[in-house]
Image (cartoon, rainbow, N blue to C red):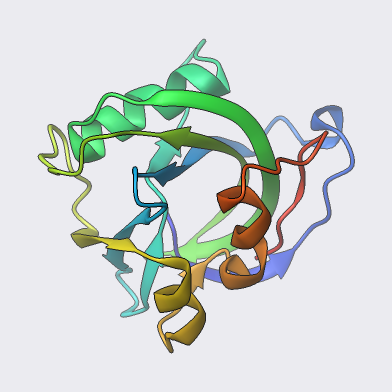
Length: 168
């Protein structure tokens, strides 16, 4: 559940994440042409932005399991899941309700590009495969906002040795 971000809280370790946080996984999904799949979303408050496939963990589910499930639900694609590369925690409002969310971002690849959601979220109204140049030249809002700067090493296959906070 994305929404208006009102506060950024740095992450040191997963143990620092309060029990009340909503846990979520997101996937930086690359195709064979090094394009990233982003979903176009609109919040109930009218915010318009692009984000990576993903969502909340089900009870007892691990982050990597949620990543695979969410990608399949939102795209219909099967993926090869790679390492966790980023994390972030943010507090936001969604339809007048305050959420505190912790996310882990995984990198993944696919050779397929035909998107057929099996269980699309209502706030998602489209998708697009973006090249790095298109993201860098765009005036659209991305989540995380620094996506254009975060992507180059990932596209080159240079993953961080440990996940780091990718910011809002």
